[in-house]
Amino acid sequence: MKLGPLNHVGVAVPNLEEAVACYQEIFTPESISDVIILEDRGLRVQFVNLPTGQVELIAPMHDKTAIAKFLEANPLGGQHHICFEVADIHAAVADMEAKNIRVLASPRLGAHGTPVIFLHPKDMGGVLIELMETPKEGH
Ligand code: CO
Image (cartoon, rainbow, N blue to C red; front, side, top):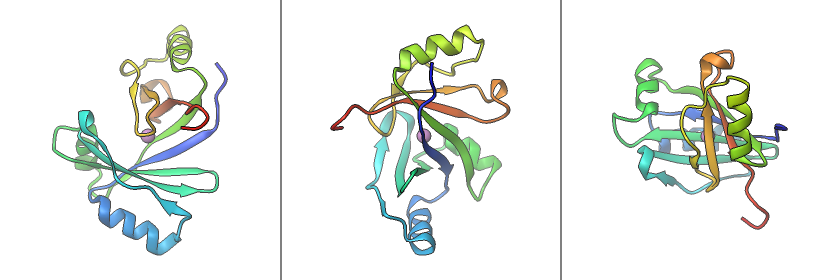
């Protein structure tokens, strides 16, 4: 498996609207996406668009999400994961398993509408890594 571009850095935030306003005022980025709702995970997401990638601002919709647990430990919010693109998510899963890197769950659709997986931070130097399949042309 060949690692593709860094797609985004995931940042957990307690309040999505405040975080978006903060990035907007301080950095005046190219643009910020509309709110994306990941209903099955109980998350609301907005992407800050940069010339080389994105910052994914992630806020929980209820207390049962992994992001809510992260915010209990980090009440101000904080860097949560980094995401690299891969050409084929199923090939990536097979490659990670062959290398004894734990994959946290089966591929599921991420905020970009392509399948994603997460790798166990204990196998990756303490960093939660998301791998997402590169969106096909025109999507
Ligand atoms: Co992400």
